[in-house]
Length: 202
Image (cartoon, rainbow, N blue to C red; front, side, top):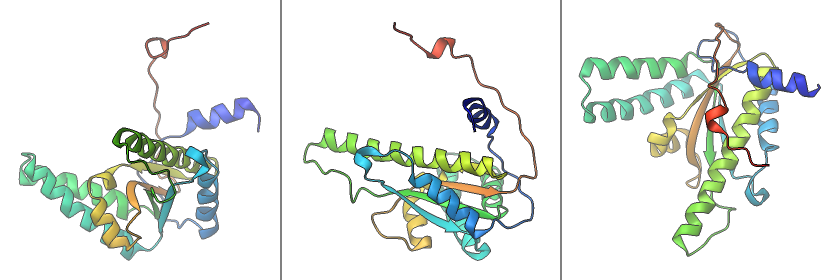
């Protein structure tokens, strides 16, 4: 693959929310995780962790529990019951209708530890950035393999719920959930001009 093909792959990736009723083979899911682990990371500590959900029951349990927290937050924020129910139903359906999902976590276990609060916050930011880079690798390879994906940040709002339902170690901090499957929709998107987003020196 040459540079033009790589750029075309990057530009062609879209967030896909509707999938065909077709399972994603386990070996493909493992390949995606392998791509993720080859992302750069701070100090090469590889703080990413993953939970793969190919089981419908587990997806439903997670989506339902997250939905309950989402509903409470929406109602506390002033939405009507009807509005809240609509948003929760849409969120649950997006997760449960996907043939597979990968929940993405970070762990600070292997990152540097500082007594200085400011430096510790920066260390955590480096871990978050590292995990995001890993997910981008995963999304791009999924696209190259003919899969659609959608990055959802909902787990950030209920990390305790995610940890409890998936029974992952206590140091695993939920960051995102990626739904994936073979696309049942096509989407086109554009990007804003770079002119106002770049300062070029030299």
